[in-house]
Image (cartoon, rainbow, N blue to C red; front, top):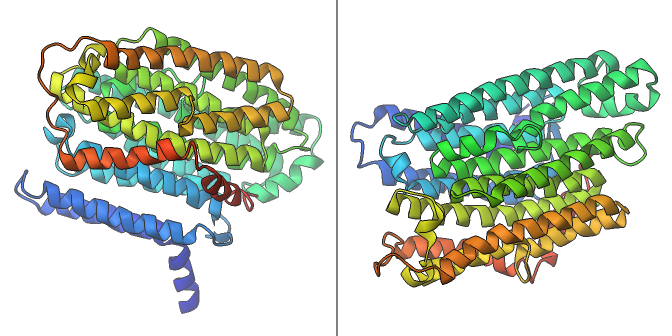
Amino acid sequence: MIDQLFGFLDNYMPEVISVVLMMSLLVAESAVKDEHAPRVKIHFFTQAVLAVVLICLFGNLGAKPVHIFHNAVTIDPFSTLVKIIMTIGTMGAIFISQSSKDIYSNLKSEFMVMSVGVLIGGMLLASANNMLTLYLGIEILSILSYVMSSFKREDSTSAEAGMKYALYGGLSAGVALFGISHMYGALGSIQFLEMMEKIPTLQGMQLTTVMMGSVLFFVGLGYKISAFPFHMWTPDVYQGSPIPVTSFFAIVPKMAGLAALIRVSNVFFADGSVLSVSWVGLMMVIAAMTMTVGNVTAIGQNSVKRLLAFSSIGHVGMMILGVVVANEVGTRAILFYGITYLFMTLIAFYITSHLSDMYGSDGYDVFRGLIYKHPLMAVIMVGVLFSLAGLPPFSGFVAKFNIFNIIIEKKYYGIAIVAAINSVIALYYYLKLAKTMIFGQADGEERVLGFTPANQAVIAFLFIPVLFLGIFWEKVMTIAGNATIYIK
């Protein structure tokens, strides 16, 4: 019994530590009387504990899969790597919140409590091994996200964002649960492996029911990752939420949803499955529309925050192309893409957050002539934009190249052409912002203040993977490949 307990804690330690951290933050929030003095200490404590979580996750990265809670949860290298991405994303969002007026004007540690809670839901979602656990992960992640999106209590835009997020989220969750009931009715099980074994024996109406259930279930996941046509909430919620919340939403819920989609696709719709042809066709249409809607709509945006929101939709479309392949190679490409997307997104949102707080706007004008006001931040931001566009020698180029490579190997030439056209469209609006920073005429000679040496050092550190993963990418690709071995 004792050995089993220690074995459980050894494998599930990151989640246990995260739960203890969340409860500790709640106690600290209720016990602290001074609204200002403890903030730095609470931030430092949270980051330190999340660093311990990160160390535990890296320690589990090479371990063999472990099934706990009667096979409801799987701890394997795939889920562990996704958790690493989400944990770094959470730490980055908390770092951004330290200097955000939107967070500090009204809050003490609520942002950190909610962030850790969403991270816990994302961890459960990434490790889910049956439909019920997966749905529970979606709900934990979603309910706390609704609160985070309306953090700016005095701002009607933020309240509207929270309401839209909650309404759309509740509807999509109900549809997803309806889909799960269809699959359970046809297959008689909610365990992934048992369902996979029974699918080849289905025919007629039962097979149709499972396919219909899987489509309905995708509504819930599609909503979390902002896939077409469930993306409508994204720009408004991103615009109305504080920028640290927006950066958090762009990483943690999306990676958790993609992890669940990858696991379900590899179990039910891998090559040779009776459902694979229909699923591949559906995913191709969704990927094409998601990319196109995200990139085309981003062109006309005057708000950089909204531009990044629509840009994130376009990137989700690219990652869904890896799901289309539905094998280990596609999963590896998505994981590498997720790693590069993590660092690019954190940097882009941090610089946008700082300029927005400084000038009271997130429009193009505040970026105008940034190269003259703060050369280092301008150079880093331009590098991030080039990477988001998929230009060499940055990591975004390797990420997109891997996606193109796997779909061309599968001879999906039509969707490859659509993806190429979308890459050109994205290049336009990224270069437009870069041009504003480099060639735009600055309003006045004042230097952008507030980028402390410590903040500059962190941003420069986050930029290292953006640059060097475009050149020395083999090791990370190997890690991503090893994480896919036990995915089934």
